[in-house]
Amino acid sequence: MRPLSRFRPRVVPLARGRVLEVGIGTGLNLAHYGQGVVRVDGVEPDPHMRRRCRARLESVSVPVQLHAVGAEALPFDADTFDDVVCTFALCTIPDPASALREVHRVLRPGGRLLFAEHVVSKHGLARALQHALDPLWTRLAGGCHLTRCAASLVRDAGFVIEETERWGGWLQLTPVAVGVARRCQQPSGAGASPSGRDTHAAP
Ligand SMILES: C[S@@+](CC[C@H](N)C(=O)[O-])C[C@H]1O[C@@H](n2cnc3c(N)ncnc32)[C@H](O)[C@@H]1O
Image 1 (cartoon, helix red, strand yellow):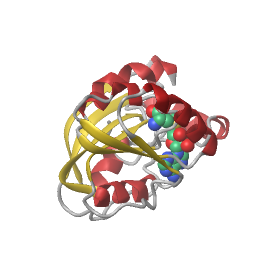
Image 2 (tube, helix red, strand yellow):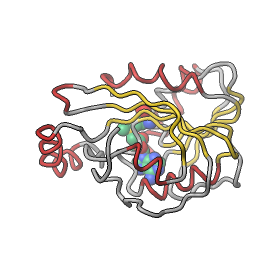
Image 3 (cartoon, protein in one colour):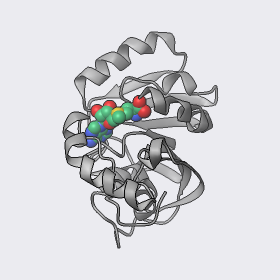
Image 4 (cartoon, rainbow, N blue to C red):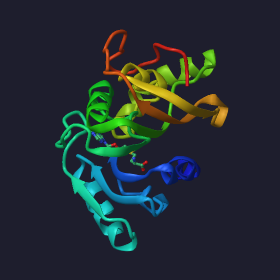
């Protein structure tokens, strides 16, 4: 995760109010939350990740509650959160379309999804390499996929992307998309690719 750490300060400090973090992992984002955050609910199905995250909680000032669930079925009422943070998790969540529909449901109207994700490349050769490597990579890297398109997944779940930036990464093989998306209309599901695999224009 270390090479990806420089993207955290671009997105996490934007969070405000009651925040949901999807796939919180070991809690590497926690140090980047600002004073405008009143509480973070972190969703993390992996017990090893949760244990490491719990160890980090002593050193952070924001109140954090961890939840041992996957993002595809969130244990929260509709319209609960002001912002949702999701970094480098859409690549790994088995059903990212369902997870984002849940994120849409639990965000208040007008709430924001703040994301940073490594994504499929726009460049033909790099994209072909990502596809070739993906089956092995997924097995070695805990279910992480190289070929997902975060922006398509986010739009298909009913968000409007307001800001987005993109970096090419090493040999264009690990491009990263950072963005702010707002909850607007209901998710249509129309045209959604269930896995988010390389079906739409990047980022
Ligand atoms: C590459 S790690 C990123 C962790 C963290 N977001 C970060 O930026 O350091 C992907 C995380 O997604 C979690 N994950 C896997 N399946 C998930 C699911 N169904 N719902 C939520 N998180 C999930 C993994 O356990 C892991 O902690």
